[in-house]
Amino acid sequence: MNASHSLYRWPRAATLILASIGVWVALAEEKPSDLTTSFDTWFAACDDLPTNRKLELPYPPRDVLPLKTFSLLGTLLDLFNERCRTGPLAKEDHWLGRFPDKETFFHPSKIPSFETPFQPFAQRLQLPPGSEVILHGDLHGDVRSFLHSLKALEDRGYLKDFKIIKPNAHMLFLGDYTDRGMYGVEVIYTLMRLKLMNPDNVWLVRGNHEDIKMVAKYGFLHEGKYKYGPAFNQRKVTRIYSFMPVVLYLGCENTYVQCNHGGIEPGYSVKNLLGSPAEKRYELISKLNRADYLRAHPGLIDEVDNVSARFLKLLYQNFIPRSPTSPNHLGFLWTDYTLQAHEPALRWDDSRPGWTWGQLGTRQFLDYVSAGPEGPRVQAIFRAHQHNRGRNPMMSRLLASKGIFEHWQKQDVESLTDANVAELEAALSTDAKRSLTDGSVYTLNVSPDSIYGLTADYDFDTCVILTLQPKLEDWKMEILNATVPFPKAEGAQGQSPPEQP
Ligand SMILES: [Mn+2]
Image (tube, rainbow, N blue to C red; front, side, top):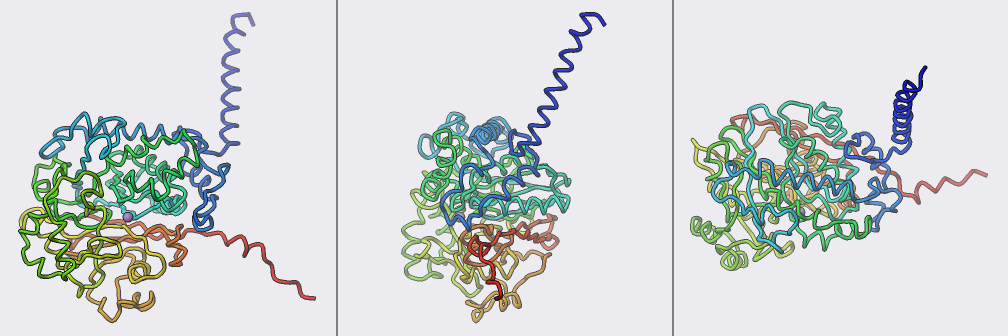
């Protein structure tokens, strides 16, 4: 062998050695270390984390964190923001009416509603018959439950390694990704992996906690600073909120359902967007025309109690929203619904505080934003926004209904208002597969590794799989509940029965 041969052979040998070291390091480390970390590795790294229930709000030790630095999440957020600034959202043809301002809406780092104007928008997602859309409610920093649901979806053939593998399947998340639980960073990482792997099949709507004021108050910014110190780039994290629609209308041909976090915002009607050519997917909500809504429904003020009537007159003005909460709360992110059909059309609820919509008020709104029997119609609402400590009437209904409750069911009579879960199970829809009711609202439960799961005593995480068809009566929803294992409390584990003498 001559000298030149051995010179050629050396780099190949070195490459082989380095490659084997790389594999060995990857196997030994078993910590997520790059943007292509497998789902199984990520699942394993998160499943052993101390539960939110056990932590009861102090933070997990830093050495158990699956992401050791902020940089990986930062890179994913950069990719997401970049896609929003250059992808379908940035195409002028996709917007009905005014195109968002290039200098502000698409600014790479400035924070809307503080440094640039608040520019909320609605989205239409029209899909072919037979498409399936997987919905999920509030996650609130509960990464373990989230991953157990994703694993269940893998087992059902929907997902493989963050990739949606079932044709015409989509995922739609209904907001409130962080705060209240200690793994908001990990939830956002998971959502970004899903979105970037399936940019045209994963959708994130904005919850009332996708707001810098809320994450400053309810834990997420503190969580980030605790985990990564000054490297936690809160500007980068909160910048993504304004690329999330505040409401998404999901439809097949002329049949739509409204998907959003909270309730109804009568100051915006999606009628024009749904009546536009299919290429129009987005519309800015530049102004809230609540006074116009009230004028169009003069009977509403007579339907409500005196306090609610006062608040209607005070808050139902036409105005330009300056933030999700000013000059007052955006209804798509914030409001609620009554439970039973006999309750009023609309009421001001001082305990939340905010509006609670009843069956009649909701019916009027759905008719208002629909084009009539021949045109596009919004026929039902899917939403989340749950934080029920203990088994109040709403949580009992969510549990009895296996994680998704249909409001105003005929069988849910007044005498059942405070019924327990077993009594409600006997009366309400509880099947794993259900059909949809025109004019109904469906509420999804919050993930179980939280103070809510603990005090209301449930351990399942819920996904709802909607199958879309041209007529609402042919739509189907299937409820998928993943059981989330909770280790026994440490005290209980440490105790063994006294030995017999
Ligand atoms: Mn909420």
